[in-house]
Length: 285
Ligand SMILES: [Zn+2]
Image 1 (cartoon, rainbow, N blue to C red):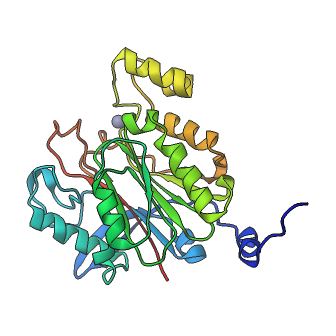
Image 2: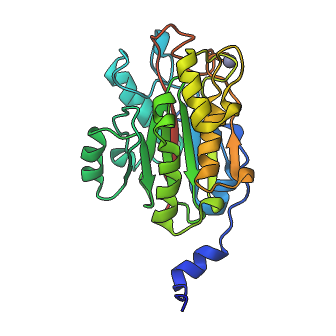
């Protein structure tokens, strides 16, 4: 006999997120304007603030100007901390700054789940490229400067933030993230909104033919953009669909970080010395 749905499960089943609608917006930290790409309708529907940042709005200088959010790239740590604080402040998470989860990104396929904050932070330092968060008031940030960053949001407001460069993508971090979020929330993968952030586009991402071939055999011909160019968006979209995503719930900012290196950090376009923009999510109580 089929098991009856619990009250909580019934409640989840009646929730439906609006389809994803990304748009440019900006938020203030003090007098500093921080432009982001966000989904306001999502925020209204379930209280989850998602944001893809740009280069603008922080205090870093030179190749890291202005809003570098990542340590270990040669920027001043004091500036990075200030940038992260300003971002949390602008997005309504000033009081939760101390709970900010920013794992050590290692181009792997591990997604950690947020539990006790201090333990999660320690766990994150062992290396993780995805964070699943079902808790309110815990901001999560992953960074990139050409790699794909994405945010997945379930109808309950729980979310995952995932970093997928080519290594992570081919190691299936995207499938892992979507499946883990589905399991953690009891929501179907097809009900989850999937937001693909700025990344190096097929227009600029030339790779060697062996790597391109690996992607084609793993994710299909759509990854081959011609002239040895790899389409990471096609690869991660294929991953999402395999893990059960609804194509209508997959949105892409449409930005190529290399073409738009004035607006975003780009490892390739900036010759390897650059800051990192971020993918941020936060579920309001
Ligand atoms: Zn491009």
